[in-house]
Image 1 (spheres, rainbow, N blue to C red):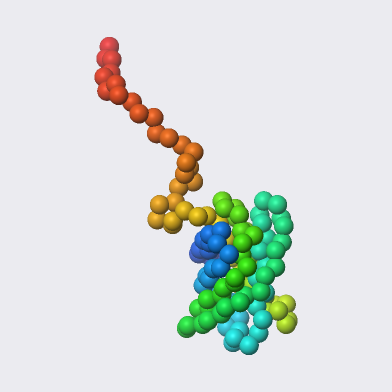
Image 2 (image 1 turned 90 degrees about the horizontal axis):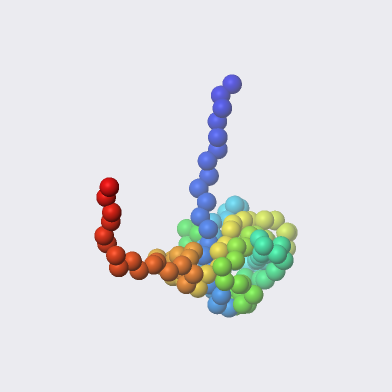
Length: 129
């Protein structure tokens, strides 16, 4: 019997605390979502509070959909969320991912931003025995 592992590449969506935002998804079911209401369900990983919103914008290019909402002001900085995207009519999950909310730019993100200061040492001498 062969021991095998299934590897899966996952990439997290990074959002800010801004109320109006868009983000790309590649849904599980490649169907036309332009005529259906899309429901976004955000679950705070710390408090387990669930917030449901409706996608107000949606565009698609080559099976990559860009969803957006104008009411995401509930997102808190430095917080992880689980995102589930549903067809509102059937309740079928078409996408699931993890979100991290931060106001820092992605290129200069640091988990210790504003908390850790490098000490300045002005003595470069050392003792040898």
